[in-house]
Amino acid sequence: MQRIASVIRLRPEKEAEYRELHAAVWPSVQAMLKQIHVGNYSIFLRDGVLFSYLEYSGDDWAADSALMAADPETQRWWSFTDPCQQPVETAAEGEWWAPAEEVFHLD
Image (cartoon, rainbow, N blue to C red; front, top):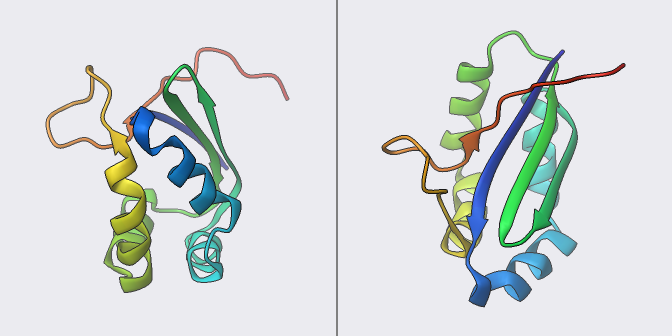
């Protein structure tokens, strides 16, 4: 199992919309996440920064991420959520959610 964390900024004027979307995540989006071996997935908000944590139990994160990105329902979901977000200043060129480095873990 791989733990994956990432961050992105939430546009302040879009906070209510983002919260509303995530209060009722589409079943098709949840099914896709499960299909690509994602579990224990949470998104936290603090001071305008969204922090995402998930556990990946598959064998190829890049391939599973590409499968999700190619899914029309996921693309439609992102058409609503992406305008609410903006990459952090330290994100690499073309990077949306920027990976966070794990510096401590306790089982």
